[in-house]
Length: 209
Image 1 (cartoon, one colour):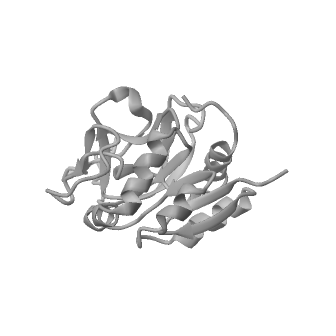
Image 2 (tube, rainbow, N blue to C red; image 1 turned 45 degrees about the vertical axis):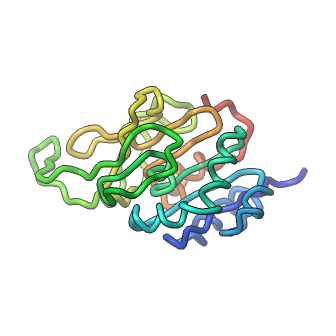
């Protein structure tokens, strides 16, 4: 049986090789590319990213962004990780004036200052480490713990996009799902067995929506 070919979009942001290794462990053939023609030939497209929204927006302003939009419009499987989720929206407070892909209406906001946990203890920003999700979607297991590294979170205009939420001084959207698109703020490649299950679902033929 042939293995899925997963192409990981190279925006020049983050440790792409750890993402590729996670997909290879799940049985996929993974390649990293910034070539729009290579992206179009994949079976599945994954866009990760750690870093600044401004650099991400600039990287997607040309042919790579056009290829990603076309891919999603054609109904082909897409997984966004961290910035790869944030880039799907219109804009981000991190980089006023910069445009995201605009696949979904909404923005990306920074965690407010003065966050506290349920016991009143102050919470640091960025949000780094393991946290639990509340999921309404079969790909993301309700009550499971995943690894996060971020200061900004997505606020979709359409609440039906939200597939999972996480509490960090209040609930925020930690995953979205719509048709062929999955995206999560946490890092499956850093989330051990829980993350491996997300990757396996993405590689499989399950109905996402």
